[in-house]
Structure formats: C-alpha cells, structure tokens
Image (cartoon, rainbow, N blue to C red; front, side, top):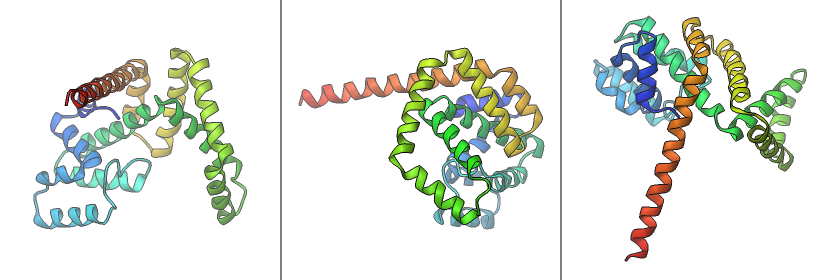
Length: 221
C-alpha cells in the first residue's frame, strides 16, 4: 500500500491539512494509534472495544460504505467534515490503485467481478455457494495465474494505466467517492501510479538488500 507520506502529500494537493490526513491514515491503517486524538475517555473505551472485538483493524474501512462512514463520523468530531471526507475517499482509492498495480490482484478482481455478474440471476443462497465453490477450485486459481501472466506480457504501461483508470471509475461509483477526489485521480492517474510503483519497487529492493545482509551475518557466524 502507499506510504503514509505519499497519502499526506497527495491529500495536501486536494487542500486537506496535514493533521487531517495523518489522523485518517491512523484511523484506517493503525486505529490503535489514533486514540491519542480522541478527547473523551468514553470514545477511547468504545474504540478499544471495537479493536479488541476485531471490528476495527488494518484497512477496516476498505470496500464498505458503512465502515467508511464510521471513519468519517469519528474524524468529523475533531476536524472539518469536508476535509475528512476528501481524506477518507482519497486514502481508500489510493490503496485500491496500489492493489491494481499487482497483476495477480488485478486478475482476481476482474475474475471475481465476472463471476459475481454471471451468477446474478440465481437465488442468493445458491449464488453464494457457487461463488464459494468456484473460488476454492483449482480451475479458478489456474485462471488467475494465466490472466496475471497475460496482463504482465500483453499490457504496456499506457494500456495498464488506462485499464486502472476505468476500474477506478467503477469503484468510485460503487463507493460514492467525492467528485473532486475522482477528478483529481483521473487527471493525475499516470503520475500517481508512477509514484506508487516507485514505492513498491523501492520496498522490494530494500527487502532484498536486508535479506542479503541477514544471510551474510548468518554465514559469518
């Protein structure tokens, strides 16, 4: 996922204050670190109970309008509501774009969407059973791997960006994302993807570097 530093930097481009962007980062990614901003002991107690119950955790707002609204409600108690909405919408959409940058994750999203729509006329209980069985099947896993390879081989960077832009439009409509956020993302989609891709590449290189250092230390024992 994008770093908090990148989340804050891009949120500032939408006029969101650094304090709001940082608070939203904590609320969504590490809610236990957000409690220092909660002013009442009752708020802190309820928040901790939700964390302990597993209702609130890392990326707990993703894909759920109800939980996203909870993040917005909490943020709006301490900061400007419009800024909170922009920060929450942008955070979730940047995480989504980062997910789409992974060919395997992108393949899974495409295939799950096709499966969901193809079973749309079935009774809900039968539909859920079918989806569950398909997702557990070796055939589905093979399709994911094949589509991921096809995405890597056949899509150049421009086509990849175009595909992600179209999927961002669909997700934004589904989550009722603020128009200002969507317009900003689509206008700057190539630059945003480049920044996210650079961060991912740097993390991989750092992990490889640290792995080699650890191995060197082990062999020198």
